[in-house]
Image 1: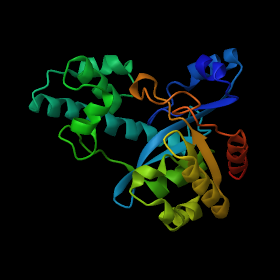
Image 2: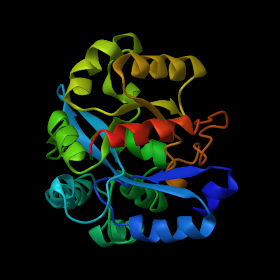
Image 3: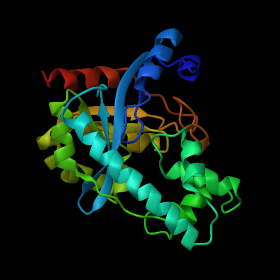
Image 4: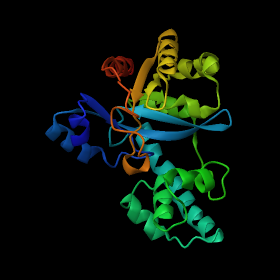
Length: 261
């Protein structure tokens, strides 16, 4: 939160994968830093035989349709993580589950934590190398896990007072010129936005997606996808240096949120 305030941001969203565990601490830190916090989570959901990352903005800790579902999602993630450690043993890597858990701080374990331990123990040159050779989908150490369906996740998010948004749509294997057709059904199901202002996008693509959002009647959102040391090329708030997410994105999300009431 202090880094976000120092970077000149007015607002920041915390969207850890599949959990809301950091929200309470982040809220206190945001208040101290004088910055607006948007609570949320990031889900990996199934869509057209691929994995889509879906952000649920304004999702608060506590009970609710999506919050309750997160427990099952976390269990599936934990089971997968244990099996991935076994897979690494099969690949000749001396890595323990405790090492992975310690890297993650005991909660919210994901593939970046595996990658960090692999780098530290000399099995990969850096985080990118660990993913490229071992952890990306289809690589030797990757294992799939059970996912919510995209439409189900969108409906659960809306029922929980949250706004569902597609994160980094370029990862879906759909060309930018086909986004409109691909996402119309999701917009009809309650999709609230698409991440347009993204750290790895050229300005032309950012504006293309923002224009699509306007035509679909949903929010064009943005973010640097900051992951700390796990994505060292992305800086908080500015991505690779040229990203500027307008505050109107927050206002558009608020408008979408009002539609839940």
